[in-house]
Image 1 (cartoon, rainbow, N blue to C red):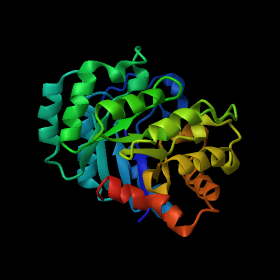
Image 2: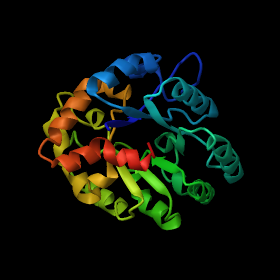
Image 3: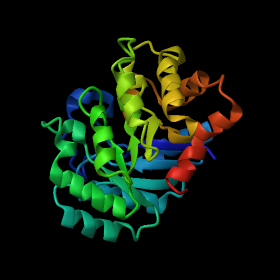
Length: 276
């Protein structure tokens, strides 16, 4: 099974996306399943994970409707209010009834406070999330947020986490440390997984598989393929390419891996993590 663990939809006339402004150019538009489905099928992807794009219940409701009408959407990562543990619990009780709801994320990289995610009230809500056996997807954009993953692991050790986009490594600058040190520390908790996604938009404009490979190789060393998952980050990825390019260049970057490792990274790990 091939799984794309990170894609988005948004309809600008139906839901507010405060971060999405005209300066984002080609992605300042409406993106829906009918646009993505042909690309997913062409790549041989069996299932996708539809991920939150706004800190709102409206965005989550929209995603769950898309999941109802498109069987190739295998899981949904929505949103709950982590500043209110009681509301977190109430919403999770509701969302758990949907067969494709698997967890939540918050756009922590959009918060003015770089330490937002380690506030005491947020930790309490994440304990509630863990008690429901739900996933927390961490927009751990380096250098402000990745360093907090070990703290979250220490405070909520049973919380299942997925680090989005390998925390946006400094690919454009062609350096590894201290990103690599923070990734290694994050990987120490076996409940922490990571996504090989969103790397093309962290690279220079003329990127190719050779730019991505050192960072993917390091992540494999730190996490093993059994805790790594491919994601396209569509439609954000079109800021620096297209769906097919991301899929093709990622496959080139891992071409030297064993078949078992490739199978894990491209779908096997995600099938287990998201219960697909």
